[in-house]
Amino acid sequence: MPYNNIWKDRGLNRTFTKSTSGQEVLESNLALHGDERFDRIDYVINDFLGIAEFEVSKADIEIISTIDNVSAISKKNLKIAIIATNSSLLEWINLYLEKMQGSAYECSIFSQYDDAYQWATQ
Image (tube, one colour):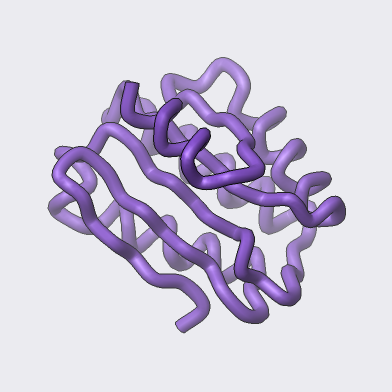
């Protein structure tokens, strides 16, 4: 499994490792949205610092952002923090953020966990 979920009282810390694909991010989001705990959380922190490779397409980003935008209709006020420093991955994250503009979800990029956690939990 290329990611690990650590559930908190108010949120989810999700750490991606090794070789991760857009399809795996999509599958992890679908599993998250289907989890009964999803309705009780205020934030998701997606940590991509430990990945060695990331394979994603524009179509993957379209699907991921569409599903998140649809989810935002019924689950308001979720903060999504994305931790990444890989320049090629940041290009895709910025595309995702662009697609999420106007969503009920707040999304932001960080380069380290502490900043992401502080933003997500305030």
